[in-house]
Image 1 (cartoon, rainbow, N blue to C red):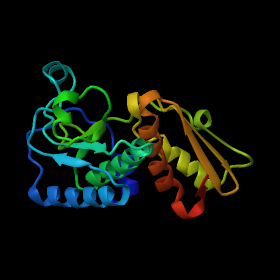
Image 2 (image 1 turned 120 degrees about the vertical axis):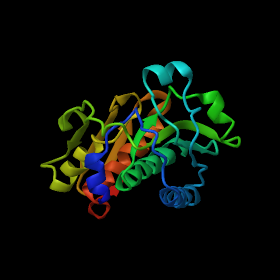
Image 3 (image 1 turned 90 degrees about the horizontal axis):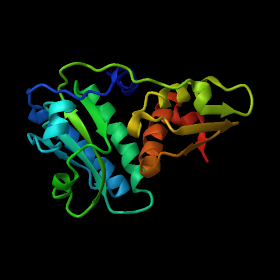
Image 4 (image 1 turned 120 degrees about the horizontal axis):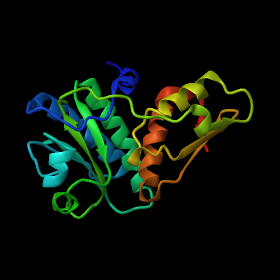
Length: 219
């Protein structure tokens, strides 16, 4: 499965089976994490066989069987949210290519318990990962015209980028972003409160994957 195929197949999954992630896949995920941590100065960490990501009420109502998750953390810098959003988007799709499912979580996790595992770094969220009880369903999405504009007739690469951006998970599923293009220049603005940086990174990654990074430049 390619990343492009994974982007189409990936949906939020909140309930997981008891099947453990094989050590071979854990090694692959950790190697992928290391690449992002080194590139952006992050402290993302994969926690396995640990059921403390959520409190009792959330486990009962929403999150069932979550025992593996990425902690999205790093030094508190202005770019942290965007870098973690971008890296987590890549990690989720990579996990999908390995046959795993994911769930980006910004507010309902056990923050006190997770903080102890972050070695003093700032946490913006977690990503549950594992074998889903089901494959999930597409999230409710806005129309491309609601979230984008181009100065003239939009080229195919721009349209494909916007479609891909709408597949990105965003905090609280708000899709509070807007993409503008002119010539080969593209910009994204986002307004989702404390999740603005994370959403920006998530959407940028998906846009790049859909549009093709060689077809445009960020401004």
